[in-house]
Length: 157
Image (tube, rainbow, N blue to C red; front, side, top):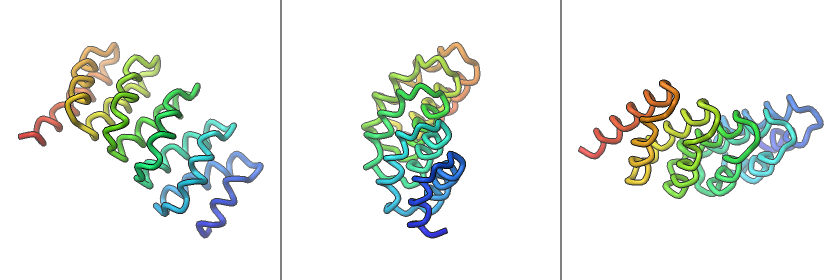
């Protein structure tokens, strides 16, 4: 399918078609899909919002950051997880504060993605947040925080 056809699919009455279109648009990595994917972050389907958030990360545009930061408050943990992951893929330091605020998210899946993304973005604020994450109630999140800190410390040497 062409870019235009996929963007049109994002308006389909079928949740599955919209979800698949969001995924395909991310894989195309064409910035012309950015506006349609941003709109799709408000889709009634959790799967469409989830896939749209990740697709925006694949596009890598800093223009998506403010929209992804808003979806960090989505009621669905999978959307929050994908939004956090996408922000790490984009690597914009403006997202660090919003990501850090999610270190107390009830979902360890979200916290794990937050820690991973903080490790990708780096910087002093991210380092402090990762040190806090070492005390997370989830051993998996603690482990990801240790790995992220090691990677950041290697980069700074």
